[in-house]
Amino acid sequence: MSKKPLIDLVDITKSFDDTCVLDDLNLSIKENEFLTLLGPSGCGKTTTLRILGGFVTPDKGNVIFDGEDITQVPPNKRNLNTVFQKYALFPHMNIEENIAFGLKISHKSKAYIKDKIKYALKLVNLQGYEKRMPSYLSGGQQQRIAIARAIVNEPKVLLLDEPLGALDLKLRQDMQYELIRLKNELGITFVYVTHDQEEALTMSDTVVVMNQGYIQQMGTPEDIYNEPENAFVADFIGDSNIIDGLMVRDELVEILGVKFACVDKGFGNYKPVDVVIRPEDIILGNPGEGSMDGVVSHLIFKGVHYEMEVMANGFEWLVQSTVAHAVGTPVSLRVDPFNIQIMNKPESEDEKAVTPDE
Ligand code: ATP
Image (cartoon, rainbow, N blue to C red; front, side, top):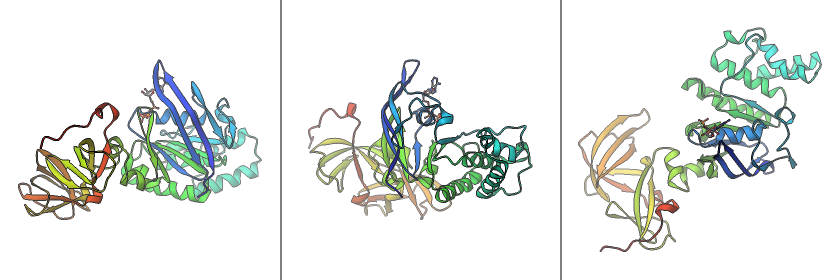
């Protein structure tokens, strides 16, 4: 993958009715990258995408595309295309006419348009659908046509705002693979908006986790999942046990009154921290074999694994295992030091170190 930045959002600030939605946002998007903006509803993902597309003008800051400042350039003059959640096909036009719409406006020849329609329908696996009306297509097929319509304009960038949000799970998963294939075949840059963390992890080269108008973390799906930088990211990406901890010293953290070996250093002594442990990293054993004893309080079969809740030291631990332990079974909990993640608490809660009471 090329490392060249294609788009830079520089110091972008945007408010609606005195409410700041994006505050000094900086983001660099590389050529051929599949970049996903991920975050809870209202965090500013769509606003960021709309600023990229030119549908919203920032109050402050610049959008740089291929070295050129396009902050004031209207959407139709930008070398990018947007696909929205609602496929927005023209209902009175057949598929061929829908796909051809943008090309006709830019006065392309009939032969060129015919070729492009054929090519685009092949790309989205809908050859032979030229004469159908949109209402005779399923939701997934309509969304594929919307993507085909965007692709024929040969944009450098495709902006996708929750394009699979209206589809059922199976169709959504099929489409995820199809989008990855398209991205690889076309070599264009995808900027994708979703609040679905699994979708973001599946498809992206880079995930940008946002909350309340700020970027919380940006990295590969593996980085975001394995090395979340704060409790918000850990909580939003996958299931986590997030517990108050006390960093006793380097490589030793106290959780719920029990000391656990960890690998983190440099937090200081007796420093309150957030501790994050993934459910799949907790190893259950017989009572007395681990660091903490507890009792299984819930058991759910999830297909590939079992999910259990274990009440131990006053905390309900979420645990994933391929082995089921019935509700009421006494168990011990153990965690490999490498799988205990220590994070600074958000600044407001992080005022002072506490003194040990031992
Ligand atoms: P969702 O996943 O629900 O679409 P989002 O992360 O995409 O959320 P945005 O659509 O960017 O969030 O909205 C961020 C905030 O800005 C929200 O509080 C929203 O109500 C507000 N907002 C967005 N567009 C406008 C607008 N045109 N006028 C007023 N407020 C707006």
